[in-house]
Image (cartoon, rainbow, N blue to C red):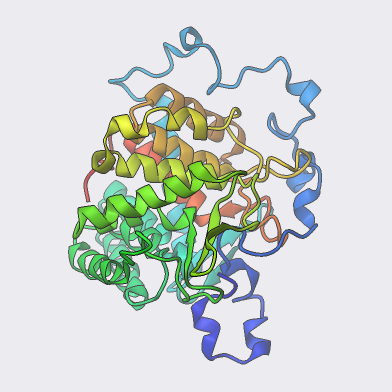
Length: 404
C-alpha cells in the first residue's frame, strides 16, 4: 500500500505531505532501503533495556518465553491469569482513552517513542480496524456509554472500505467488529463483498488494487482476519484462501511473504517484504490459528513450532542483527499461540513485552512500521497496542476471542 486511498484525489504535493505519505503503506511493501532501521538497537529513545543491550550483557538473563517449563510453572496457571496481565491491560486501555482524546475523529497509526504524539490518518487505511477494535475493548473494560459511542462511531467510519479492492479488508473488518455489540451488519456486508472478490481459479481473494501495484497478488498480511471473515458467509472460500497462502509459503524455494500471479508464469515470489520480515510468520501463524477449525488440527500440525521465532521479541528483519526489534510481531504471535492452546508460551511472550517494552502509561514501544522505508522503526504502533490488549484480555478471561 504505497499511499492511503484517501490521497487518490489529491495533488502529488498533497500526497507527499506527512499525513498521507509512507506511514499508510502496509507491511514493508517498498524496496529495501538503508535507513534509520539499521541503527544499533540500543540507540532507541535514549534508553537501554534488556532487549536492547549488547548480547554479552543479556547472556545470563532468562527469557520468560524460552525458560524451562518448570521455571514458568508458577507463573501461568491455566485457570488463573497472572497478576501482571490485568494491570498491563488496564494501562494499555488507559492509553487508548488518551489516544482517543488526541486523535479525535482521525485514526492513529504510530506514535513517537519520546513524545508519545500520534501520526494519524483521516480514513484509517489498512490499520483502521485495529483502532476500532481497541476502542471496543476499552468500552467493554470501562462500561462507559461515551466509550461505547466512540467505538460505534469509529466502526461506522470503516464502511468506506467495504467495496475497496484489497484483501486487507480482513484486517479492517474482522478486528474492527470482533468485540462490537452492534457490528454484525457491517461485518456481514464486508464479508459478502470479500466473497464477491474471491477468485475461484486462483483460490483466494487477491491482494487487490486499492493501494496501487499489481492486483493479482497474494500476501500473508491479507490472510489473518480474512479467513474468519469469509468463513461467516462461505467456509469453503475461507479454507481455500488460507490453504492457497500456506501452499505458496511452504512450496517456495526461499522464504517469501508475497507472490505475483500472471498467466504466463503463474505464481512468482516477490522480494518485498524481505524474507527476514518478522511479521510475515506472525501474520501467517495468526491465520493458521483462525483457520484451524476449517482445515483441522492434523493439517496444521507442526506449523506453530515452525513459525514461532526463537526469541520472544524478534528482530524486525532477521537479516539485520543490528536493526530494531518488532514488538507488534511478538504481540501477534502471542495471540496466535493463545488461540492454538499454547498458553504458557503465549504468557511468556506477553510477560516479556510488559516487563521490557511497555511504559508506565501503557505505550508498547519498539514496534517497527516499515524498516525498508525507515518509517517509525522504534515506535508505538496501533496494531501492536491492539494485539497486546487483545491477547491480555483473552489471557485474563475478559473476552472470548473465538466469538464474533
